[in-house]
Image 1 (cartoon, rainbow, N blue to C red):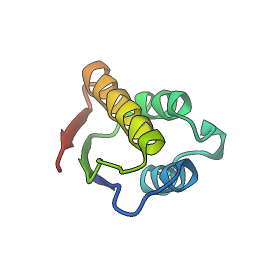
Image 2 (tube, rainbow, N blue to C red; image 1 turned 30 degrees about the horizontal axis):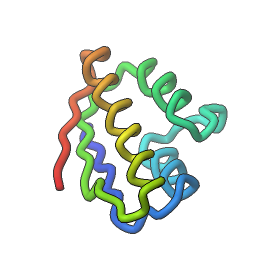
Image 3 (cartoon, helix red, strand yellow; image 1 turned 90 degrees about the horizontal axis):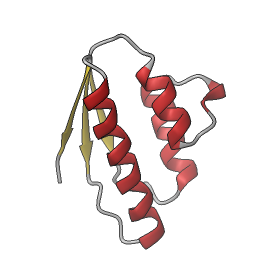
Length: 89
C-alpha cells in the first residue's frame, strides 16, 4: 500500500505525530515519538511504499526533527523487507 507523508503545513511535533498516527493507524501506546514510531512500524508485515513530500521546514527545530524522521524511515527501509521509502521535494 502507498502512504504519502506530506509535510506541507505541519508546523509542530503534535501535528506531525497526529498525521503519522492517522495515516498509519498507529496504536495509542506508540507514545508520539520517533522511537515508538520505529517500534510499531518495524513490527508490521504489510507491504508499504512510503513517500515523503515537502520535508524542508523553515523552523530550525522542526527541520531537525524532520531530518530525524527521515533517518528513522531510512532505517526502517534498511531493516524491513516490506518497506520502501521515497523522498520527493
